[in-house]
Amino acid sequence: MRVGCLFVPELPLQALLRAEPDLHGQPLAIFQGEGARARIQAVSVPARSQGVLPGMRIEEALALCPDLLLRADDEALREAAREAALDAAAAVSPRVEEAAPGLVLVDARGLGKLFGGDRGIASALLSAARKVGLEGRAALASGKRIARVAAVRGEGIEVVPPGEERAFLAPLPLSALGASPELLRTLERWGIGSAGALAALPESGLASRLGPEGVRLWRLCRGEDDEPLVPRELPQIFEEGCDLDHEIVALEGLLFLLRPALERLVDRLACRGLFCGGLFLRLLLEPAGEAILPVELAAPTRDVPTLLSLCRSILERRPPGAPVRGVRVRAEAAAGRIEQLRLFGLPTVSPDRLATVVAKVAAIVGDGRLGSPVPEDSHVHEAFSLERFDPPPPVEEDPSEAEGDRCLALRLFRPPLPAEVRMAAGVPQAIFARGITGWVVSLSGPWRVDAGWHEQPVRRDGYDVELSDGAVYRLAHDLLLDRWFLLGRYD
Image (cartoon, rainbow, N blue to C red; front, top):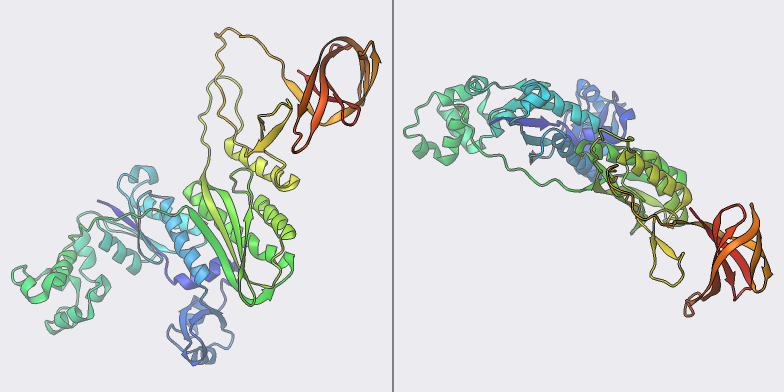
């Protein structure tokens, strides 16, 4: 059994730096509470070098570091960073367990050949964490608890080779192994303070003196860690956002906040190999209430400019109507289409690129103007509706198959072309339209259509006409308006 561990220290601080990367290198502190009860929760390295430590009051911290930047703990940023650590671990292994916020365990069995050994697996965990804006430490060991201790106590990458677990744990204090205060006081009275000293005790009589917890700790000190991994099902909903110190009214200010949130969202989706299939904006309003705006996506995508353009469109059409004090961006994950490369024939378009192009076009033309046409059950032959665009997989062509009967396809003009028709003996003789002029060589019809009387009445006569240039058109005479139109051309 090989278990990997990703540890993200100072999670509240890293959550803020992930959302505001310009604060890197600044003396920064995260505090919790209000008024006199406010306490420093996490500090950056420059602030720690000036003596600022977690647990201090704000006045004490400012006295030591006058240039200290103070930020309140943002629950939305912290929760997003916690989920981002899970997404980073899922990029390496499909079996992921969260031991604590910012502390993630993965099943590393069989991954050595994929990543180049234990150090390669640990390096992959750190690389995935950096892609979602987190810095951490990683470790590989033969058990959950040992891997966790190695990641928390180590620096960078720590690998515990199989069979060397006891030697690795021997110099560590028992407090680092998660022993309870009561058990630590008992062992301290015995003069035992390290894992090596406890492992040297005989097993006989240990349970009666220390209880089940003492036996578990003794077995861990001997390198026996057989606790099974309990993987969790990763969520398919991704959320990013932040709370504001001041209200925002202008649209450009909202878009300025949405772009980094969308970028963080896309980075997390990329770690999981997923796409944004649905998007929702949740705006926290001042003084109370919220506005939830659904953003329609024509196709799953991870293109940030496209998503931002769609957010701009919905905000322009449905402004929040009140100052905004918080922003949340929520994405519903969708699997990308995977297509096998073809050995013969023309190369096909990448499904991912096609979906991105479709989403970009939808952002330009607007909602309801892009999709796959589906014929309606109507007497009006050219009537159709639009459904969500979902291209079918390419059909493999077999040249050995005999060609069947061919049929004509009618290419509709949108909108229909107004035409001027010269009549002779009650039938069309010549047609004049924009870019189309000719004598009628042959025709069939008319076919009377009388439909839609309860909604949009359609009453017309239709003809299929062949002109002198060899082209075949669908011609219609609107009996309600007494006008002629060219509905389409047959291919």
